[in-house]
Image 1 (cartoon, rainbow, N blue to C red):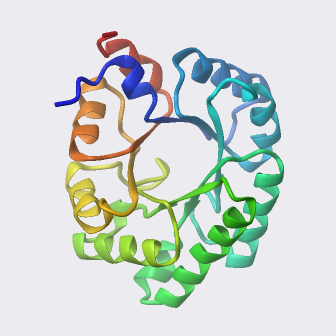
Image 2 (image 1 turned 135 degrees about the horizontal axis):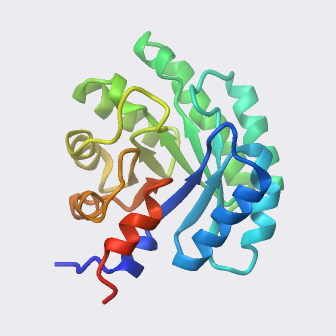
Length: 227
């Protein structure tokens, strides 16, 4: 069994700095936190990507960016352009929001094309991964499974539970469905509501490869055993 030390947990964390009123100085401070704890990535809004890429250069912490955030309702062409510009600004990972409204309407073709458009931009770059945010709080277990399958069919690298701006956070039940559906071929990321070490450890032991946290990053890592 894995002993989830602070360093091992930190290496799975995408530290999010996504609030609407966050300033450039606060973005820099979040990058400093990410570098201090050696998290996997610092995830920011498109307008912050160039600054974050500069701040994280040479640190080993990846600059990551949201696409179509937080509602996922941009047209596929707009998400593709946002992804392209973000990659040009230095993004190494893209967390795109699935169009949950189209999915719930039964328009799987729209959803697939939406994801494929972003994946195509990532593949042009060669070293950029795409995570699809499903917003699982709006989906039944069966719908979560189907959304995972579409994400895999469209070429994404990860599926992710939540934006943190929806009506609910990650849950062990949603993660269980995601792991069982695509965990053998894709990464699974739990996001939102992860504010302490025990919650983080629980998701990692379920099989998550990444965790999304914001304000919870420092406290949960400070709770983790150092060795």
